[in-house]
Amino acid sequence: MIKLLPSYAKRAKNYGEKNMRLVFDTNIFVFAFSDIPKPSCLELIETIVELYPKVSIHIPRTILRETRNNLNPPQFKEFALFIHEIGHVDEDIVVPFDTGIKYEQMGLKPADAMIGAYTEWIGAAVLVSENRHFLSRQENLPFKILTAEKTIRFLKKM
Image 1 (cartoon, rainbow, N blue to C red):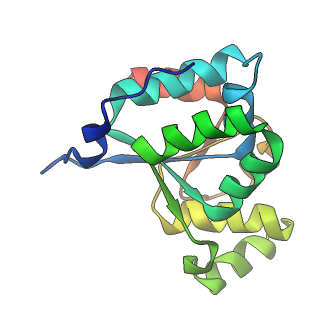
Image 2: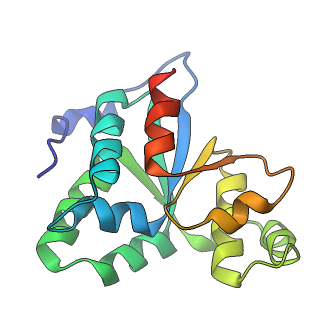
């Protein structure tokens, strides 16, 4: 079980400091909250808890739904408590249509294009995924695509 921050932590403000935004793909949550978690994904979640509010997680509603579909009820409850405390969920429809089209024109499937567009739209520094390496073949993306392990190393350099 992941040790969360006190419930008042969500209201903590970071006045005057820029917050680093990360977008997590579904697989990071599934690997971290499963009965036998992938060590790098669990360590990344724990690192985010330690670094909050300097680092925050943002996800579109699609990722929330996919995570719910891939975890059992107790696992999803733990995930939901985590994302409620230090995450931010946006509705898919807030992502500008033109941004999504731009990613589809790169040859991405609609769901992948939406995640890329969302990551760009919120100004995230990193899209964290264990399987979106095809996106990293795209040139001039406004964000990095890193695995959980590489994200941990990236965050420790901060």
